[in-house]
Image 1: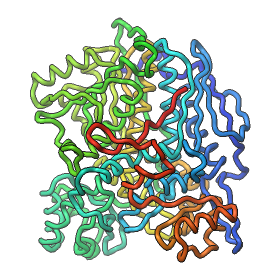
Image 2: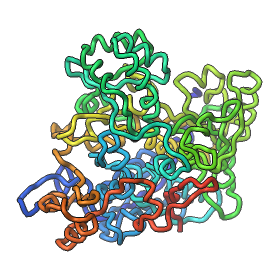
Image 3: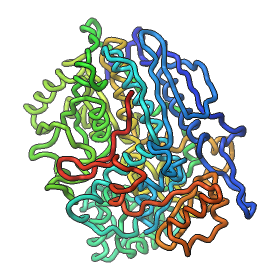
Image 4: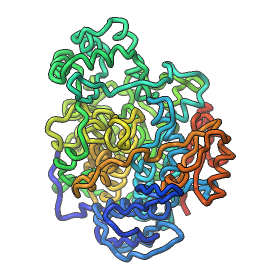
Length: 625
């Protein structure tokens, strides 16, 4: 890669001042409220109410400071969380975030946002009942979207557009994180595999919890044959294992768990090495904290192009969206890069997908809507496409020609693949010195010495996410909801926007790198901080546990959980249980258990639509004023 230029703007927010206002944080290192119920129970409440919004804003502010912003004023404001960037040639750019776009519907914190948007339903599919994530997942997604909104607003200004204010909400961010699952639930046909409890991790006979990964059915079969697993279990297990990224569950035969538990960890590693599959021990948060290098979740490196012509700011056509007129070439697979490009498209960019001859095979992945995969539509609707055979020298030359006229080239190919094809940042900078070259990978560059395959569940296992997402009364287990692919896509979009703003202000192209490892570190940052302070890293037993009613489940707000747990709601309908809790001044909401019901859920009235193929579509995560 070309070496960075130090005489130009390297951090896009240099010279800008950040002003933050919001409710005050409570005192104490953990900055969590505590709730005392009628029984005297006392436990940490997590990120709740105004406290949670302030912590969310702190994450946004941290990322903006990494990008060069200087800390300005800080004010207490009970009306909500607000941020503003000012300075240089920019007019004041503001952002405002809140828990819900419809505040009257009981979504008041992380717990109720997870419950209402379907996050608990998807995360709980492995166990067969809704389960909360013990991390602040929807809030983290909101913080990344808020940062993107501010960067996009500044980029629009740099291209001649007006200043404005961007709004985000945790409930809309939560809907975005489950958009693929929601689209599948509302498709014309059913799933290709059964939605039923089950899935990794596995346990060795000497007690090692581990994840298994392979994309090759031959390697899957060879691994299990080496361990003398029953042949019928091997055959029956592959398809649910293969589809677990899409379904968030893997009901493969219990015989495979029994087989794993009959062998030592050393023997399992040996079988993996010989078969071509990979295994990864579930690391603890303490282990991750000990090795953490403190690096930012992305890197920006402007090209050293010598005397090459510098990029001139590109005016945005008319007064449309901030990325209007920007061309993004996306060579993305699965979720991470396609989601990043999808978000850039929402902000006005023209996105052109680079697909193999015959088109992306995932277009036909069931379930479909009007013959097109509903999951694929959730991330790729509205994009143009061009078929390119990257194995062909002629087609690679054609792709370089396309990159010469683009603003962004975005991909998530395997490590080293771009360089092997002659399509790395150095290659494309030679034909377009103004290009923003974006790589969304698994592990970043050289940050983990013994990194396994860079897929969502392996990164969860290696970084302690499997421990962070479960309270102390549940064994550690990576979520089968694709947590890091989604957050990795959000980080990828954020990095591209930072790169585009760097280009507009500094005049030359830039390479930006983001990773699933960066997403894991952002998600687990509070737990890693606790580990470094020598405090318990995991949330207490029962943290955010849904409460059973006669016909469903409800979840109280974190600050009300201990008090709500004192009431027996099992004989009451969900509506009656909510009325009882609210009558005692306790905030709570119903748990969405069927994502197909979200289309008619009054908490999201009018926000979930259907696209031209009939697939459910979540609302844009930003509002602009």
